[in-house]
Image (cartoon, rainbow, N blue to C red; front, side, top):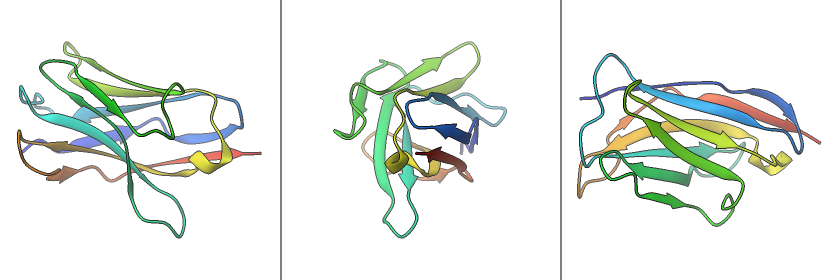
Length: 119
């Protein structure tokens, strides 16, 4: 079990940037596992934002964030980052980091970090 721990949320004006971090609480992310970011906006369902395969670095993005958000990993720090640029008010949500074994759904979830984008 690898419990993710998120950090880096906050309040930013539209057009601004934030970087979120997802650390694997004292252990390493496993090879071939996926680490993903999801978000839940007020009154909406949780939605997929982006993910990365820890070993290969393959990335996937929701259409709504392509070109604005970038997911990356730092093997030495055992951390996944979500760089969010050109933020919009509709990006306001609680952002969650989660990880998944190969071929399985996301099993381990962090507590979430609030991102608020003001207009």
